[in-house]
Length: 158
Image 1: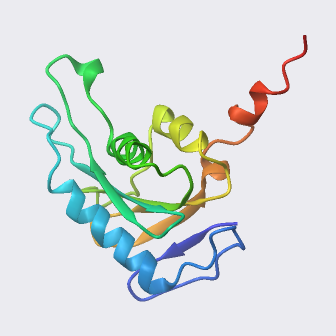
Image 2 (image 1 turned 180 degrees about the horizontal axis):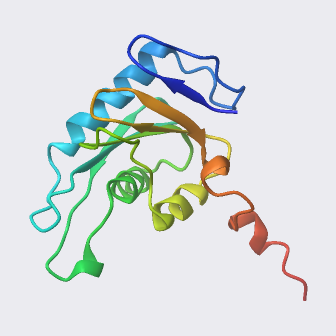
């Protein structure tokens, strides 16, 4: 089950492992993702994306997309935030908020970002937002069902 929130409407969320997030914390996380997108380096696509990653110890680590003239060398905002968090010793996350300038639909992580998020578990929250601050809530599992992750490596038969 998921949650859709607009500025004037809230619906109950499913009980996730990180369900202790307050409405205030969710709002702050989404605001920080929108702030992070202001730092995006996207001279080619002009498509700004920001993310704000909430670690298990309640630190917020932001990321933005960074393009490169050689397209495949760019990095998405979500992977940027995760890489920064890992480089700072964080391996457990509660939530990530993702922001863009899109107004008609919610920003969603690409397939590569979904797999990177999956590396750190399936039952943590992902907030997909619009430019107006409204958001759609999912879990990593919702975004990447029947996924392959670290635990699958231990199931290899010899």
